[in-house]
Image (cartoon, rainbow, N blue to C red; front, side, top):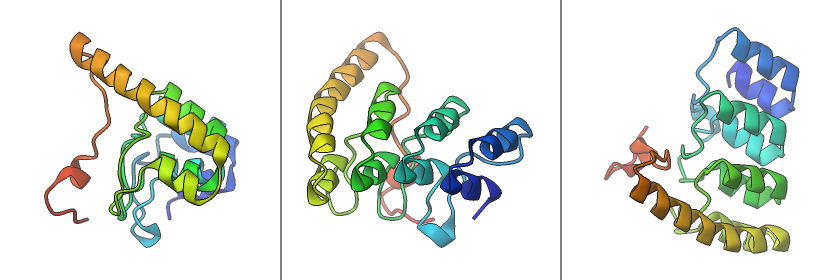
Length: 156
């Protein structure tokens, strides 16, 4: 686990900002000891909304997946982190990707009984589809594909 992973998991905004100011890390580093979680996965799971915002604004990719195919939205849905889901959606992060089992974040929220997240994700999925359609029409680049995950055989 990198210093950034640790600061993010602890929710220490000051340390996260200091690490980033010193440009001491790869924001998208996948920790092999923790199922290839990036710092953004940790921030989403822990509900650290401000850190999620800081990471994405500084180049963290919200489309990256763990070894089981979870995006940050899956972790936020599992933990019932509605504020994180709202932020991810507002930043056009993918909130409707299927994991290895075919489950989207909305299904994960259903499994864990987070009804407020389920309602939000149901609406957000249709809004996201509309945004992607508009982006394609307007030739706007959308970072929603983890290239390594998209390979026919997913290996790290």
